Amino acid sequence: MNAKIKIVFGVNDFLVGGMQWQFSELVRYFDREKFDVSLITLFQFREKEDFYAALPVDLPVYRLSFTGWWDIREWWKLYRLLRMIRPHIVVSSLFYANTAFRILSPFLSYVSIAREHNTYIHKPRWQQYIDRILAHVSYRIVAVSKTVASFTAAQEGIAAEKFVVIHNGIDLARAQDVLGRLPEKEGLRKELGLPPTRTVFLNVARLTSQKNHKLLLEGFAAFHATHPTSLLLIVGGGSLRPALEAQARHTGLTEDVIFFGMRSDVWRFYKAADALVSTSLIEGFSNVYLEALAAGLPVISTLTAGTDELLVDGLNGYRITESTPKAVEEALTATATVVGKGELTQGARETAKRFSIRQTVERYESLFMEAYSRKYRMIYVKSQ
Image 1: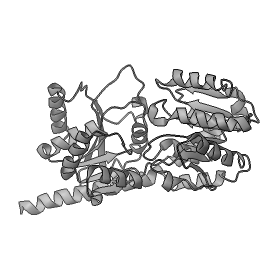
Image 2: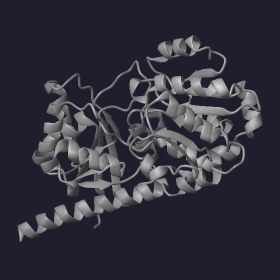
Image 3: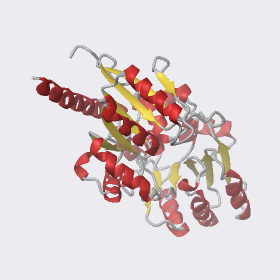
Image 4: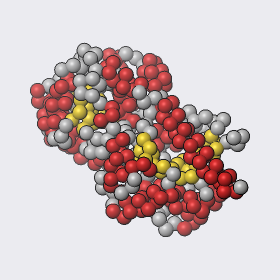
């Protein structure tokens, strides 16, 4: 094989989100001697924060401006763009992009690989039906965790054999470099205006209903009643911030629940905190969990997808067994009893090592080589 394999990643948008951040990490490590990688985004939201600046400067990025399903002009632009690039493989993410790029694949003769990043429990029936049909033109569907794969297969009536699990990964070397350049915990807490001796729980998430901060605040209020020196830091922005701040005031936690908004220096918070806590309704395979584990933080989480592959109670964190304030309180209490003793720190770091970004890249590259060889071997055989 002399020519490079052309890979296009197609996504709905490049707003701040887990899938977008993971791609910005992955793309740095693809073998540029073998793969010619580019990105197409379908929607632009100029008033919202995005991750374009996190992409390598030499990555070709094509920004389309779809306004909806029936935007014929943008459909035509997308078709012409793909004809110009002539990709061998298109990897798509999220429903709109998965649909658009798979619809066009028979007309442009590329291999289509869709990706599923979460357990979309509220996906409408009509979207499930479209996904089921388009699975027939998909070479594979990549799921970021075993639970995402099994859930999607059952929800959409797609054969399990169509799925391949490739976990999200983390750049461990870069994480350790960033952490090593930061001040020690006590110094960081002073910079952030935090008391040096209090137990600090951290939540890093967009302030949306999916992340279920209401439950987190209810559970933390119950825990705080018996652990009054504890703090909860919430890092992330979103439309629910005013309502969540009002909830914290109503429960008398104004001084003990601190909202920091969207931050670009999240590693400072990982190093300053004692544990990460999340009460999300759904996840796929959380990048934030991987980052926290790499920083040596135990993770406290509801039973979302990926936690069964990441967390072991008492080894690297605790699972919240029910979506109730009492269960949140119990998991916080279990963690608080061992915080500062280092019992969970080593387990957290060892867990992160199993999910290196380089291993994730290797899995994708192997899938690309397999798809390319099967597709173009078949074309060669048919031409004989």
